[in-house]
Length: 431
Ligand SMILES: Cc1ncc(COP(=O)(O)O)c(C=O)c1O
Image 1 (cartoon, rainbow, N blue to C red):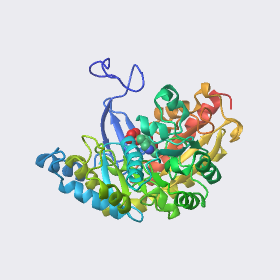
Image 2 (tube, rainbow, N blue to C red):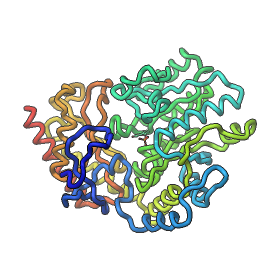
Image 3 (cartoon, helix red, strand yellow):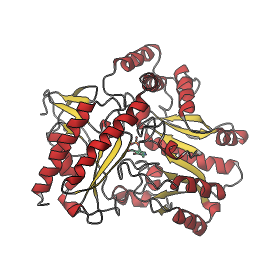
Image 4 (cartoon, rainbow, N blue to C red):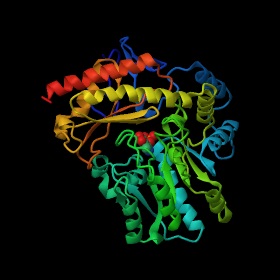
């Protein structure tokens, strides 16, 4: 499979002797250099919304690249201005000021600093802690990891992590109790994914959860940061995941679908109030990254968002999401399948012993990886859910999140291959 050259010098995040080598992508499919075709039913990692190899985007990238790819702090580019305008128009409420970065972790970490700077500038310098939720995921940099609740990915780095409180995923009582216990004067913000992405695919809270969270945050002068890195830009059938509850956050972190993977770019969006407060008393927000807002990435993401609008792909995502969920529902009759859920084209399946939600498999069995590998062998890419959705250690789950352009035939193929994968793993482990 390693057709040319050795991989000995690549420090990849997983150690494997042999990898399929990616050749190209078209629509919902990826192709390796041996000519194998894979149906990308997880959009990479919930990233590729418009499909692979869209000629209009490649053209927009080339057009911008011919003009200029990089210019730093002395300049602003038209593409940055236009993309900020587009994001502000799509964002809920008064979220109006867009700070560009290169990835989701930079976006959540920037949200953390924007919240802190806001409180410093508005006379509350003791506020610095961010409350977050166990099982949440906000990224791998130290600030983002400190806010994240994925135990398995935190453990080795615990000595570096900031001492931030974590609460149960969907308890507003606990949120208020922790605010009182720690003291609101120390709490800067609460961060949450509107619908879980990689930690517990497509798990949504009860309908009254976010309205109550909003009230609690307002009561204690705590900013509400919503992490839309997975759910943003249409993935759940509306512009942003939080739109399902008509709640307006103070700060929103975005990433992945902003450029559909055509270039690394992400953005943190804040309200005018926060922006004005920060700049009223200081001439600069002292934070930022070299590639933030570079003209090439902004032009690329702008072309992607214009393409989504032109082809009404968010409505399509909602419609195809309904179809995908309906089709996945049929898997409930299989052994091991204890839950099926979804919003738009973000869907998830839980796997457990005897189909009992509270009876997880021994993690050593590697059930998630086995199902993902079987599906891969059948030419369909689904995403392994991160370890520990139940309690940080236990729980197996799979995410299915194809591009918005997925067809009915492709949905049938995804469900068919996934069904066979689950049946074969169930047999293998004696379920
Ligand atoms: C909800 C959420 N926030 C933040 C991140 C971090 O994004 P990145 O990997 O681009 O740094 C991720 C990545 O999966 C995510 O799922």
